[in-house]
Amino acid sequence: MSRSRLNVAVLLCGLLAAVSTEAEIPDRLESVGTNRPHQPLAWLSEEALNLAMDAEDQPEGSRLQSVAHLFRLGEDDRLEWSLDPEDFEIAPDGTLICEPKPLTHYWGEQATDIQALVELAKTIVSVRVLDSKPGFFASSYAGELLEVEVLEVLKYTEPGNLDAWGEMPAAPPDDFYLFDRYARMVIDGRAICLGTRQVPRGEFFLFMLTTRQHPFTPLPLYALDTSALIAADGSFYGYLLDRSKADSQEELARQLAGLEQILRRQR
Image 1 (tube, rainbow, N blue to C red):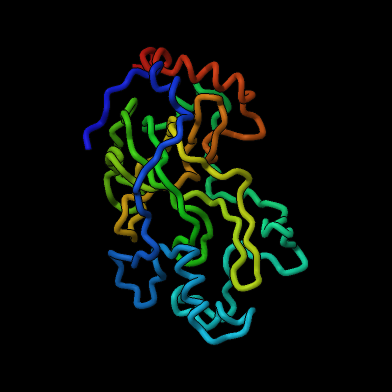
Image 2: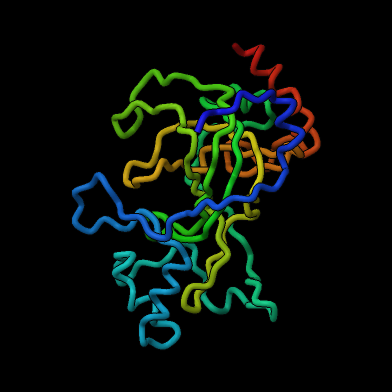
């Protein structure tokens, strides 16, 4: 699909609008581009895992082990940040009650306001989050796969060097996926509780530190870890903005309204 050349001011007015879509996120993806004999799955949805466990004639608490071949986990491996039964409870309405754990692999430079974020980000795009699905990336990493549609590329910096995989990152395609390390799920009696807020459907500005795709999945897939996804009201997700030091949500919203002017000054 073609990228709409929309004015930033117009985008801001409709960023929180809900979007109806027939988009489907896959339940299972095999790893590609590797010769490792026991490469784990690139992606397995929570629903697909539960269906596989339900198909096994195994008692509660041992069903995950019966389908361990799906993850190719070793006997001592655990799903990331899984909790012991005494560390969580299930409310009468089925809600998982637990203490969420923010988790990131990104420990690089962070921004505290929109101006610094514009300078730090290599790519800035306006996007629409179409759908999300909980599951597991590279077997043990719990989270959600977000399906994203690009509305407009606002900034793209040609990389000067090859990335860590020996490839030259390219501008993001018109449609791609983001992996967000947010999870609220109970797998065979063991809970996983990650992240603080779930990304809703709607429109955002996405500030990306890198456009290097994950090399072992057939999908164009990026990590929200190294990005900032910001709505018009200043609410944000990802770790490129320092949550402990960032400006208030109201101030971020005010700054975001001047994004077009900030970008013009930087050019």
